[in-house]
Length: 103
Image 1 (cartoon, helix red, strand yellow):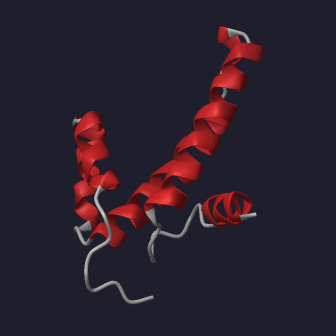
Image 2 (image 1 turned 60 degrees about the horizontal axis):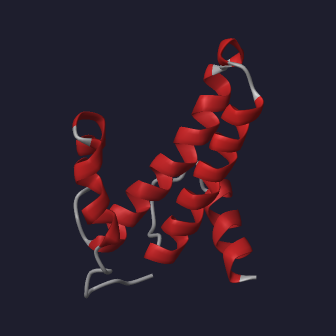
């Protein structure tokens, strides 16, 4: 149930960049998005790629990453690193929550 609750929050909060996501919630959203995206790639042909489906993959993951950055206590502008250096962002997402987390 905890996994489904975290997944529901991640998917329904796609356009919400406010608030916080725990490491667990971010991990659930990340794993789900990767699984369905790779499954979709496996079942579709290369010329069937749609920008809408790509956005359906990227937007929930980006929103969850921004909320995770908020939870770790860093500025949201750290997410800009994702555009230029995508692998630098992952350590920020794995850091524990900041000490003064108020929900």
